[in-house]
Amino acid sequence: DLTVYTFVLPILGSESKRLSNAIACTTDPAASWSAWMLRGEQPAPAPASCDPGPAQAVETLAKGLGITGTPTLIAVDGRKKAGAMSAAQLAAWLAETSEPRTGAVKTGSGGVVTTVSSPKTAPPTPIATR
Image 1 (cartoon, rainbow, N blue to C red):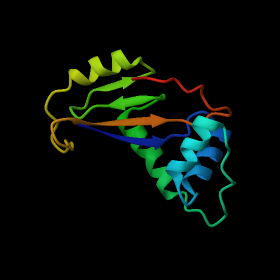
Image 2: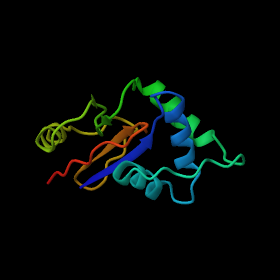
Image 3: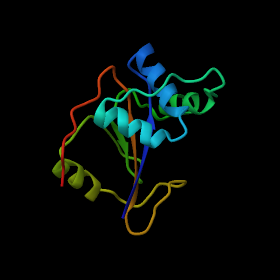
Image 4: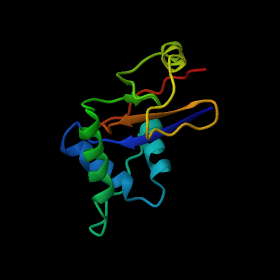
């Protein structure tokens, strides 16, 4: 079993921050993120009433974890891996996972992996993996 958490991290400048705030302020951020990344559908602008607190909390968390680029994966045992990798590389990296560090969460017999992504001015080309 594997649990994946995706946090939007606007590290690519003001446009990246605008997009991540707009995504975070929609009624369904996960669907908005998928629409942007998979189909290039930009979210509506964030309303003035949007609370920037959650997005700022993600930025603070990333700084505290030493995350300086995306994607970044964090395994249940605390290992970090920055940069894209193939499905085979990801499977091998996950297979190296040891017991969780104190305070980490482990679900079932698998682990927890955190991904951090950053919105760009154009969505990436989707890559199919098995």
